[in-house]
Length: 94
Image 1 (cartoon, rainbow, N blue to C red):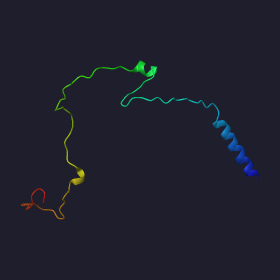
Image 2: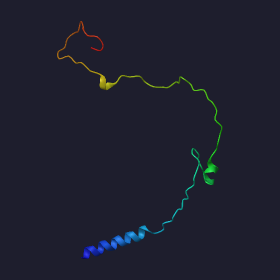
Image 3: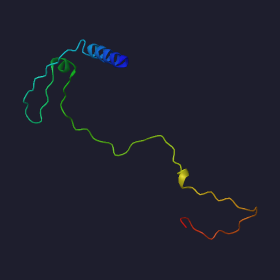
Image 4: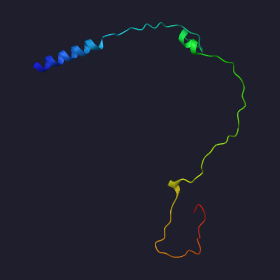
């Protein structure tokens, strides 16, 4: 019984502190035209609007990098015995 009182007290305390300082924000629904956007005054102060210009796109660009092979697709062959190889009868891709 004592446990239930403590749990009830803690639940009431949490409930009262959670409801403190809640400010309601009223949002009014506005019927807008399709494909339209609306801004408030603060957003309009930060917004700049420019006309659209055609700009040529470069088909090539220069980049710095390194070309290497995929380590996951490499098979390393090590001989069981030492010696010299005179002929290899396989081709690339075999």
